[in-house]
Every structure is written in structure tokens, then in C-alpha cells.
Length: 168
Length: 162
Image 1 (cartoon, chains in turn green, yellow):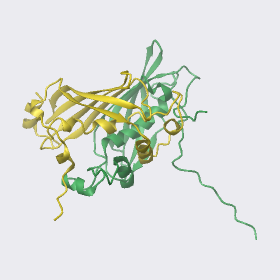
Image 2 (spheres, each protein chain N blue to C red):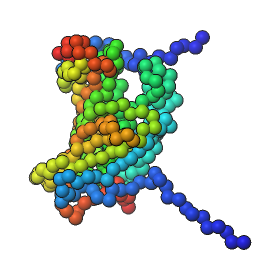
Image 3 (spheres, each protein chain N blue to C red):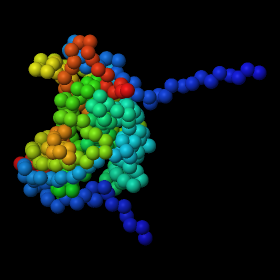
């Protein structure tokens, strides 16, 4: 009797660098590879430190005391999804960069957020080319929950770095 | 008899009414450390297992995710100002990244009121934040804007932020 070979499955949460990162040659209008994350109750509780910390973002009693029907997601956690897009795209050059946004809609439990960005402008600076991005997060219905902008210096064409590649 | 649970905003310690807020108010100062527990919680919550956070980075050390300091300035505003009756919204955020935030290092975060204005039935209050390392080098600048009330009331907001 022969053993059935095991089909090893890939870790769906494994870190994956962006295929194309910040580069001075990227054209205006270039769309960044999106980052998608689902924010569950478990994730919200892990972030908040529940049960030691019972905020309206992770605890039903606390949410009810604030008049909310259920916990809504902390804007700081929401911002983390955009932060991942930002550092993956700019790599080391997130230092010297900027990020700003408006929170435009509440994020609810189990919302699936997708961070997106598009190159809006390119500005020549003494140290290189600064890429100016429009960035936003949208939920599973396509509603924008966060809109903003980001910037960072981009290396010359061909010298692009990867935001988060393992180091030796 | 069990004590009724307090709403989160009832736990804030702020004593200065927002109506008396003045640009230049020093809202608070705290020290923080991005420790292993916090890193584990944040990376797990976001499923963001960037090796720069767990193994090492081109900066020569592990770093914290860029937006991590939002963990620390959130409660500061309403530990200084009285939480408003109409509730409060996290409306806007700005970051300027000057140096990476390292794991295990003690940083100082100082918040100051830098702007206030009425808009579309709400009052907006902008807290500028500076984060410095133990040598006094500024590593990040941030600005957090909160808005009140949750449900816009034109007449109320026009006065509060002026």
C-alpha cells in the first residue's frame, strides 16, 4: 500500500513583497499592487489587548455604552493597512516620506479593506525623484473608508529596493 | 450588585473644556516603548509579517510598523480636554517619517494643540505630535485631528472651535 503524498499548502498570511516598488521611472497614473485585509472581531481584540482593555473597538458592552450597536474598528488599526502599502512600496525610503489621510466612513467588524495607491505626481528633488501618491482604503462594497496622500523618494530606474525583503 | 460598566469615554481624565481650548495648549507628554508583546499583537492583528519587524531591516535593527505610534497618542487628547457630550471622531491623521522607530527603545511623545476650526457642523481640533528618541533626536512628526460632535450640529460647532 503506497502512502498518499501530502500536498503542502502555502501560508496565506506569509509576507509577500510588492512586485513593483517605488522607482523614478514609474509613470504618473501607475497603480500600486493592492493590499487586502479582513478585520475580524478576533483581530480587533488582539490589537486592542482585550480582555485587559475593553474599548468600543473590541468589546460589545463598551460599544453599547457608547451607543454603538456593535464594536467598530479603531482608526489606528485601519491605518495600519495603509501603512503596510506605504512601506512595501517605498521600502527604506519611507524614511523621508509622508502619509496623511482623512477617515471618511466607519469600519465595521468583518469588513474587508483594500489599500490602493496611484502615482499622482513626480517632483525632482536634490536627492532624487519624489513620488506623490493618492492613497485610499475601500471596503468590500467599494466604499472608500479612508482617503489621503503619501510621498517618498524613489531610487533611479533599476535600483528599486523591496519593502521588507529578508536581510541576511 | 455588579457595577455598571463605564463607557470608555467616561474613563478619560480630561478637565479642560474644549470650549476653552487654545492653540499652544500642551496636551500631554508620555514615554513609550514598542515591546515584543505590542509587536506580536500588531503584526498578528494585521497579518503583516514583514521581516523588518521580526528579523532585521536595512537600517541595522528591527523597526516598528510606520503607523505604530498611533497606539500611544489616542488617549492623550481626552486625558487633557473634557470628552464632549456629543462624542468625538478620529477625523484626520498626518505623518512625517524622519527616522525609524526601533523595538525596545524608550521614546518621548509630546502633543500640542496646533489648530482648531469649525467646519460643516463640527468643531475640529488638531494636535501636533513630536516623537523624540533618548538622545533628543526627533524621529517622527504627526498630527491628529479629532472632530466633535459625532452628529453635526451647525449652531453648536460654529462657536466651539472659534
